[in-house]
Image (cartoon, rainbow, N blue to C red; front, top):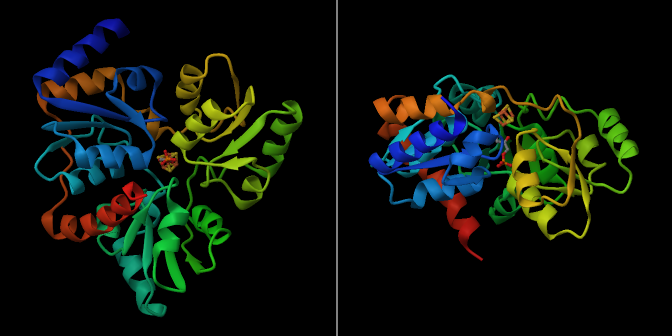
Length: 305
Ligand code: 13P
Ligand code: SF4
């Protein structure tokens, strides 16, 4: 079936099911173009918590659908491909976190949303790449444990007086980017603004002009007077960047920065999922209730001025 036919089929099914389609900025272009909202992890979790739709079809990875289910237990949350996971989310388990918490003095746990619901349930508050510094600084404690992303934790440590204890997790896509590759891109495109995601290594972030979440990059490119940008994150974002700024030029820092998991969902998968109400993600209440506290605190902080 042609993409246009599939797109209208999905839109008809969304109407029939009273559903909303949310897509992360790294999804395939045709998924981004069909969705009701395309955004970063923070925007998508806020929308999932606030929507009136009866069904949420989440085009992203498993932890994102779980977060939607945590916030909206009365809604049906569908993930069109159950095997779309985030390897970083699996780098911390509730068992390993509980063990670590017994080994260190009592301190708040700031958990990146790229984590399982069971890990969120053990956490004080969640954060995303868009609000990490604000979340860490909001805590009434001198020391904080951050899980699972060590790069995000090291970035936060540069912007707070608090002592950050980090976990040895990382994003396999962002952590792969080396300072050498970033330097080559800067040499090749002199004058281009280098935008990097905080999941990148510290030595890469040192070379960046700005460090932003995915939607932060889209906003920055629109507001900036610069005409060209080196994009230091997963390549799926180039679609939104070019769509929002057709007169500007965007160079991926490396064409290899592609997340296989973020590219799994196709329009066919979305149509099948909505047709058969297949791929429901539901978090059990004993995990959902404590996990909701951690996500809710983050959302409250993010929407307050
Ligand atoms: P953001 O869109 O929140 O910046 O997240 C990046 C990411 O890696 C999501 O998996
Ligand atoms: Fe996980 Fe990285 Fe893929 Fe995001 S880009 S889903 S953090 S592996």
